[in-house]
Amino acid sequence: MTVPAKGDSVPEVRAAQLVRVPAVWVTPVLLVSVLIFAITLIYLGAIVDPASHLRGLPVLVVNEDAGASTPSQRVDLGQQVVAALTHSPQVSTPLSLQPVTLAQAKAQLNIGNAYAAIVIPPGFTSSVLALDDRRAAAGRAPGAPVIALLTNPRAGGLGVSLATNIAQPALARISQQIGQQLLRAGRADGPASTGARALLASPVTVAVVPYRPLPPRSALGLSAFYISLLSIMCGFLTATSVNTSIDSSLGYATSEIGPWWQQRLPLPMTRWQTLLAKWLMAAATVPVTTGLVLLAAIAILNMDAPYPWYLWLFTTFAAEVVAIGTLVLFAALGSLGQLIAVLFFLYLALASSGGTVPLQALPGFFRFFSNVDPLRQVLDGVRSILYFDAAGAAGLTRALILTGAGLVFWVALGIAVTTWYDRQGLRRMQPELMAHLYRSVRDYTQRASTKEEAAPHS
Image (cartoon, rainbow, N blue to C red; front, side):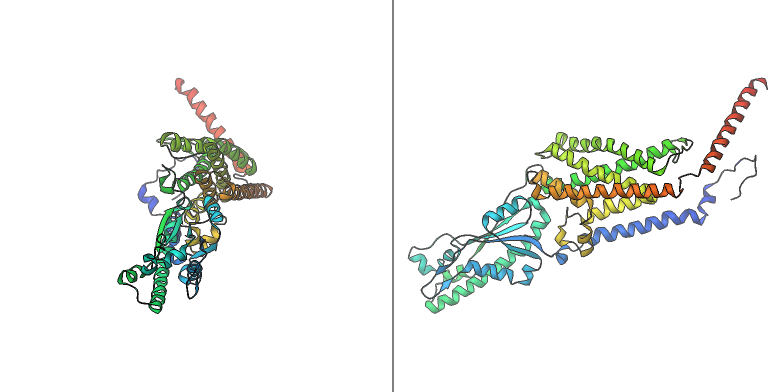
């Protein structure tokens, strides 16, 4: 393409001419290809096989059994169950088994610190030994031996499923081992009946019981995740909209709605002052957007939310931080900042938040990234407010501290980058070029006015 001489009209460019320019293809093809490839690795890499990455999923073990004595020995089957669980790599590697009392277990389940609790009740050994039909005939048979597996659906459905799928088969194997042990002891004391043998083949029943069922209208435990994600979206979309609006008002971006196109004259403004204006506008807009999210979710869709004001204050705070961070990336990297913000605040955050796959089931990279992932912190806080009575120990305190740390980081980074750009004279448009544009527009306006004045006399 050639540059027209002064006074010549600019020739129109046709589509065939434009698509033959290699430079036009490079940016979209390269950026989209890299972005899609990265997103695929991030999404599927985090969820393709959570069971194989599972390490240290917190499960509590409560042993209230005191054992029992037989004519020949002392038997403590509760302790035997605990030892079998903790010494089995198939159980102790994917699960982090923590021995606690029943009161401690309930306290931990109440704040979402564990996905399940294995509870061996008092009299467990006695109830197993009494299954021998000779003891039953003597009228000394207590209730059937049961080990309770208390699940915590409020902590996360997939985490509960993973814990149950490991604990249930392990307890079934232990039950069979106990049965074989008792059958051997029975042969030593005398032959057991056929019925006793069948009963002792697997004498222990595992009862899976939800400790605190999810509240109604909680999206099967996913309401916390979706509200958290929508809060992140409020911050990101507000920042994108504010960035475009202010840049258009300052003349550094075009305004185009349908066939109407407008380009204002650029206004001289430092990068720091521009970022500050965007922050102020975003800070005023975010409370409205998060309020609309909760209005739709709670007032219209009737989502269960026992503390709506706490929820609005926290999600607004989190969305403000995301908006501020996104605007900093725009200020530091320009258009590329939007892609980086999408990856950081949305795609990487979704993969490492623990909202669908527990953190303990994520690959190492995502587990590490979750420490700085904004969505994880927001999810901890929202889950605490929705499911755990807004308890600070349930994740709300940690969420507030880390989200506050994110606010400090982004504000400090934004001030540092924009003031450094300003000190280096890296303006968005150099004063000489801006002055030339103003002169050109003034000359064009004067010529147009002269033509209009002369038109009636021609």
